[in-house]
Image (tube, rainbow, N blue to C red; front, side, top):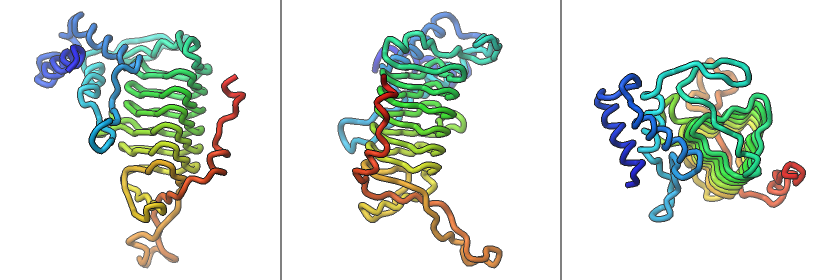
Length: 281
């Protein structure tokens, strides 16, 4: 256990036992919270990690989520300035002044990165877009216009989030695990990924696809129905299947519910989703 984890654990125990709040938190507590946010922004700690041993599954780091919650529970809301507008929050926005040095860019005027979010090297953030606290955006990733990257979401390297894509968070509503988008994934415009769903690496998802643990994924490669994840190297899109109420009198012609179909990833699909080199020039 690192020193930072120990300090967060101690603060959480006091907070959970109603021994500490925003009014009683002293300079030492605030310094710990600031160091915690710095570590998140530098990518030194993450809300979830893929384990290199065992089954190689993603696991949430509970103490990191506690540290994020403490930054709300132990800080007071106060007026802040951004772009000539006064807003009220417990945290300032992230300092993006070093993005150029890492080859990343964020376009004005509505690109908002909250304190405690990690933005990697060679990233592009197109306005308007919002990246929440605890989110991790990997190197070379594109966050397109009208995208939301929710709290603690883990976005891999060389990912393309199409315009108007929603990546759900874990804080509102509270979820056990964050959404995971692994490396080299392409999400089409209007996709929604929520409630801890895991999108496997090198997959291509068609536009307006909803990925959530409550919607089945019909994996035609392994010929099985799975929930909560899209395996690696898949091409996925929305289809509709018969509902259990399809024979009801009120549903003339049958009722249907959404599902996701996953097939082999074709070379042509990969070529069609490659980013233009001009975006990086």
